[in-house]
Image (cartoon, rainbow, N blue to C red; front, side, top):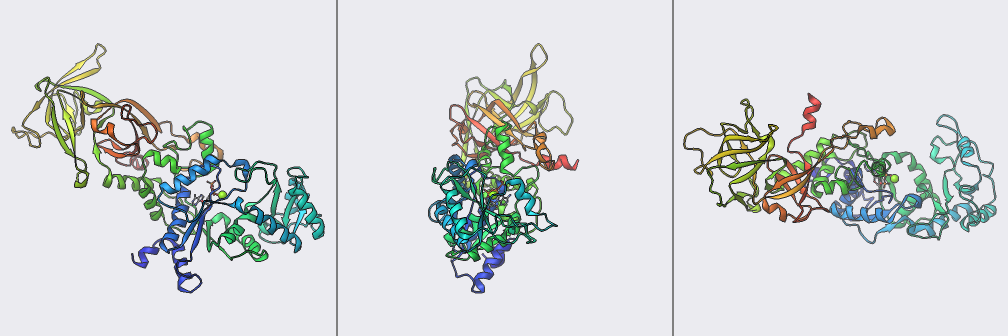
Length: 560
Ligand code: ATP
Ligand code: MG
């Protein structure tokens, strides 16, 4: 890969390359980390951060750690830890060394806090939350010193140890860094570094009743692990001076640096764990891995491939300017991947029975069709053909104008990979609904044009009624029908697309599809890209999810 292609639209690649060229970073010495908080499933925004952190390490021969940022035990759970690890590996990445936890460093962080106290740079404060806010000042007004700010180091140390030993109630005291209450950057106005929280922790059990804040944890954990480039999203830019203050004032073993990039925002999508949790808790979706969710687990179940997600993240690039990416770009990435790689198959979603009157009753032919129009490696597939077949209900009309290139009474159509048919009669029930169509077939038209020179205008898909298997197909579409569902804050639930899921239980698939492995993707000819459901698909009860339609219908609707 040329350097140009290798750095592309990713400013952090340029930056690391420069660090190496200028001798600030040795070859292969890059160490990054991906630091999720285990309070929910990972989403498409996290995929960008994963591709960035693991991708840089891979490109420059460095390392990337997985470190759970677990300083808030109240919201964290083991099942989220398990899901996050699985998602990262599914995306195609592997962390270096063990799975790490910020809580692995609680002992060291505690010592660092005592170190600050002993050097007169931290104090125990007893202002309540409201007073704390009042003393903090605003963006335009400086803050005021806490009345507890001038306690002696001895007194602070005794109080902090008593906090650790569980002698005070939650919220009654905090430890604060002593920096500058008049600083322009509010993060430097004596930020809280430890709080009392009598809470069981998923990793450390009941060892601690005080927990360090994110700000007091992150940079020091980076230093302990020898992270060279600590990459985070832009909202942490204002925290960087604090990150640097801790590194400068503590006996840390290394000097990591923080860099920020713009988070991924996607239209028609919410990417906030809190809001995604809301969708799960309110049963708007069936779970974190519901195929409509923008979670990695949801997209996986929907039939997205790891390669398509990595490709999407590469296309989006890494910059410092905020923007909104069109979800159509993500959909394009998966469509493009499946078009190139997914085997073709036939599935009738809403069946109408067709009887071929001049086809012998007991005859069965095995026709064959390519697995993919231009991928010989995907081989041929066998298609049983018989007197009764299913076609799509919407592929037949008694009368139609010229634009309708499907089966019409008194006209011809070609069956995909099979013969030309002529529609003779529509059989109806008492209510006038068409229940069956009688046709004749032309036995000389397998791969040949009809001898009378009249070519059919259209090609439709079909499945042999006596050989096909019944299947459930779940037609998924975008979860939100509004371009910016969370612009109005909490009202995002009002923008849920009522048509985001339609379940069809009487679909007919060509027999080989029942053998599909869970998570195997296909193009169902003429209907879209589908995947055998990862959890529910079985040979005797096939279940397929629509990954994406063949073409983008949302773009058309928007332009209309
Ligand atoms: P959310 O805002 O969805 O709750 P978070 O930032 O609280 O996400 P973390 O688990 O702390 O979630 O995120 C882990 C890493 O992923 C962080 O480095 C964070 O900056 C990054 N990240 C989170 N959301 C995005 C996004 N939309 N685009 C890019 N990176 C993201
Ligand atoms: Mg976070």
